[in-house]
Picture 1 (cartoon, rainbow over the protein chains, first blue to last red):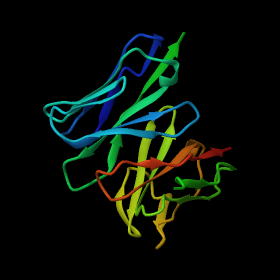
Picture 2 (cartoon, one colour; picture 1 turned 60 degrees about the horizontal axis):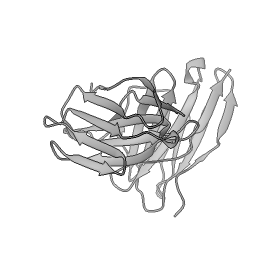
Picture 3 (cartoon, each protein chain N blue to C red; picture 1 turned 180 degrees about the vertical axis):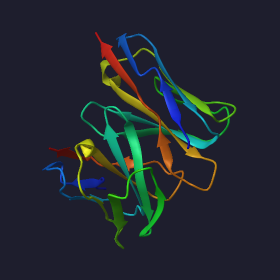
Picture 4 (tube, rainbow over the protein chains, first blue to last red; picture 1 turned 90 degrees about the horizontal axis):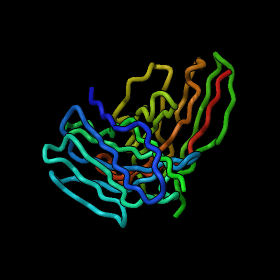
Length: 112
Length: 113
């Protein structure tokens, strides 16, 4: 079945440093979504990428979808303590089954 | 607009018992998905319902079942509970099936002793 891996599993940065998490799928995706889960909270939708090579920005966050639509990345510029949480990518197959497969997640810790 | 509501928030059960969890989606959302979240396994897909029909099912044993009602509310049931079923169970609703962003509830924390 489809597998979605994320690296790193965990990253600890100092406030102001940049952060990147990478997402890789074993199969080609129709779209990829990114979610953020704060400690003790539930996943919250951030963005969806659909087109090959697509790049989207949300303030300090930059999301990319690979040309082959099998990988994606989330880059945060100048992290803040409010960025703390676990970031999940979630990929949807190009086949008829429309379930989202979540990545393993990257937990980000930001200290002053 | 009210978000996704899951009840109860916390539950403690004993091995062998059964449990039913409830989820009320955002008004107008017809798709409801269930996920199991554990520290070791991350977010694992259980099943998805759309218009009262199960559209997708994850790799969980038959002890895990669900249903959706005509008002889009959904329930999931776990029978013969095992210690390994202890987890956060998250329900998510979306406007349409496939491709739509998921809106998660706060989850039900199930502890099996």
